[in-house]
Image (cartoon, rainbow, N blue to C red; front, side, top):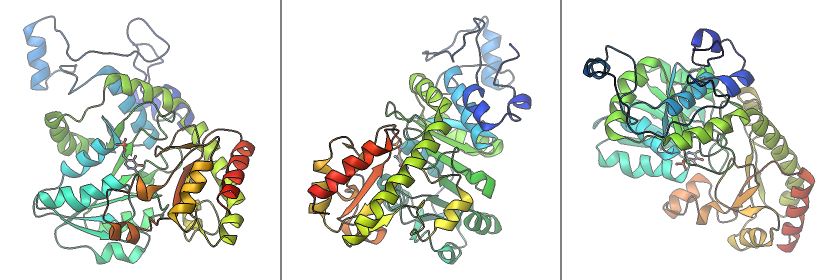
Length: 405
Ligand SMILES: *Cc1c(COP(=O)(O)O)cnc(C)c1O
């Protein structure tokens, strides 16, 4: 293997993040290709029967089947692990495949899971509907209230599950506090880091055990593929996640893994620029929204209740924020008047996208749960892209005017 291999931890773990993002995990074939190779193969062949027997017995390294190993997927996993400073990572077919696997691989009937109330709609569905079907008790709390975490613990509590900032209300969880409480009670923290990614926030630096991802969002960053990932200690990945993953098969396609590898090369640049655009656009909108009696939900603005905490635990606050304009009619009027920004429920894209969570991403929830979470009828969520900030301001300016704001 050439000296430029990105699979040698002794070298790669000393690289800074920007170097890891473009080189970490690169595993060149004998052709010495510059870009990562795409191995579209489900199976592998062997020179002799003993070779494959040794691999299946675990006595020899090597690929056996793409549900178990694939070189392109392995490159993505190594790159994400390096960026997260995690011992190990396994890629998944989607963010929801990752969340489902991260919970089901370690929870059993009789266990208890404490989860954040403010969460992506499907993450709440796992907690509210799927886990209880298998005899796993769940408690949903206000994740931004530090005291509620410890208060919710029972003797059988095994997992804390939350995202920060949360989708779509931008609640910020105190990572250090929640991870400390979990450690003290032998509870595993599973952090959904999709909104920030390792470029902006590294939960493991605060003691998180497992970091799970929708890589569909900022990691790909160009709205092309579904992808997910789970990071953890080598022991947890090998002993807890892998038996579940290898036998249930929520694997990512090598093609999608390759696309995300390309996305990671520019992750930091995109995340920082989009965060900067989001702070500027939020600051531009806030006085207008305030005057109209609305509400701005933006962890990068001083009006956010956890602005200082977000500054401490995040490098920058990310591309997404939300604001409430009072009624569904007004929210729809703004969306319908947009000329540049697209109406879309996706996030993390280099394009600016806006949606009405109550009728889209969170439409599947009970109205009461939605209201308790703060997903009001007038709430709009925006993903701020890489367009020129003045074009974005002009588009929102005319859309707000059209809606009488
Ligand atoms: C989008 C999202 C998910 C789900 O990811 P998919 O890749 O769409 O399956 C999970 N958590 C958060 C916070 C998300 O934004």
